[in-house]
Figure 1 (cartoon, rainbow, N blue to C red):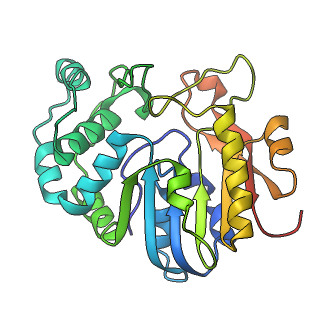
Figure 2 (cartoon, one colour; figure 1 turned 90 degrees about the horizontal axis):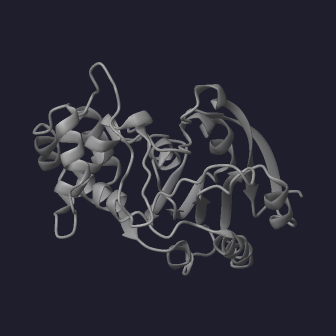
Length: 274
């Protein structure tokens, strides 16, 4: 069974029991405009009870999109490239400093997988200039090359459109019998909460408001849409008029181990009782 190939902050593997029952059984187009680790997609692709004719995975993180394209179309080359990477501090910082402009999808994908498997806490974070800036991790023997997992992911991605695009571009033509899962960067839970950017430019309050409007627009066009975000007063107010469900979600990534544990998150659907 295909599974996420990356450890991704906010990944939904541990929330699948809450999310899967809400996904329609038969879908024309399945779309994830904020793919991240794509846990829900991989779970659905491995679940024989749900079918979709077409799938779209998109993200604003161009490195992530290049990685998925490489896994889809050049997985054997990607595996060979990953075997070139030793696990040591000097290699890590040399690879981290690389300029990926002009690199192939295979080189960019292998770099992302390597950094993801060897950086501190498996966290992907970029600075204001869009450069990956997570430090070297300390592991006994990280599994840099998971050939079987990459081959299974490649098979799952074989009929998927993988695009670098804003969420509104992905959903523009969707309507009846289509399903969208939005998993955007979460709003900070407090004014003092640290912010982590996954792509240059971030995702601010105006973007959150745009996303809420898109949820309504999809409802008007007959498409089912589901969204995850932090359980805050602001988010509850923003999604008044939609079905809002509170779920307990494990927080596995935090620089402070004492702050890891369960938190409340919202799952919003544009159908169902309010």
